[in-house]
Length: 239
Image (tube, rainbow, N blue to C red; front, side, top):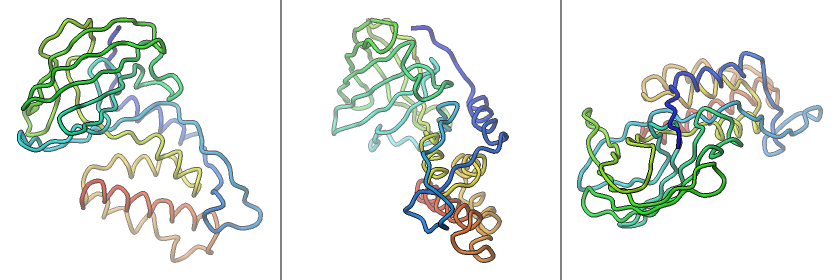
């Protein structure tokens, strides 16, 4: 596979470019709305967005389930079931969601033994690469106290060397905008925050229309969406 290493800032820039164009969507029928507002589908966002998600490294207790950013420019979705881990890895983290995995797309199964993972996998035909083989991976401290996965061996012709946890937000943003309307940029700003204090600082500002706007108005529904996004992000950060 041909590794590419997009910067998270570039992904944020591409999604914010959509916001700059003033893209919004009407709410779904699940939220109170006036008779003149019709539901619409969620907007198509310009790029997959996977914000860094630092997770404290605990060598005796870890769960690898979640999204991981590869240093090959791909995104890997892992699930850990006991001592077994499965993944689907796709190229194009800097592209539209429908373009994921077009350069390469792989699946793998690994067995966890302590901090070592012995994996076997293969590319699949969605992408252009067709290789297979074994990998030896280590689960370890990234040097800052957070978890990472590192490739240390194997015979698979593989382009990724380091996996770091990340937080995919593009589908969540599309869901919020499609349900409540509002600003793509505001949702991205909320979901990209990694500190509970920063979430608390913006809460009053973005939810103020809940107390001042007419119930069911676009401003009211957008504020409700921002409030829910903040609550969801607080849950994810254990605020």
